[in-house]
Length: 278
View 1 (tube, rainbow, N blue to C red):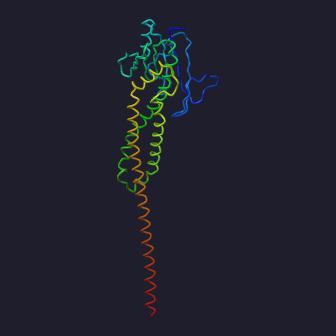
View 2 (view 1 turned 90 degrees about the vertical axis):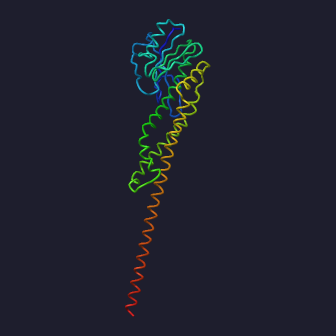
């Protein structure tokens, strides 16, 4: 077997025809992972030279190399993943493993292990990449909506007649918050532990990926942030509902008073006519 290999892992909703499925995911949404091995004989291939990942999705490229490979080959793989150096911003994370190491960042990885461990390592990387990207999506969405939540915060304490016009927007935001809670709940288990059967060496990589990328802290932070959103919009809906009911009750009471006043007016008119008739 060659001392190095280059793989691409891509994630799809529907598997292409006549293509073997590498992994299948059901949570937080259904996806399949496809594994493609480059056959150009060059590792990494000349088609993979850009430092920037193709997208912010979970797709990634992986160079697999033997620990006993020539220093020049290992250096070329490390330069491929970190062209600006291992200490540059957005550089890869190095994870030391028994018998070798791995370097990982969004869109790329280098695995320096015995070739019998390569597919297991790629499996662990694919599982982690899929769920980590889903976690990153939640983090971005929640960070983007903070200004909106801060703007809606006064509704948790006081509501004006003009605020009732925003009832639809507040309801939509409330549903969005609930959906984010559901998505995080679906992610918690696979983020805590890889759900795909792995050999022992790959299990170590999976565990250290979760530790190195602060999965526990990030999940706990998201849980707290979503809880803040839930409080704001639960209170906003409650205040808007109370104010809406108050307005309805107030209008009903006004209507009752008007009807009573009308009835009293009719009674006085009848009394006046009867009195004048006598």
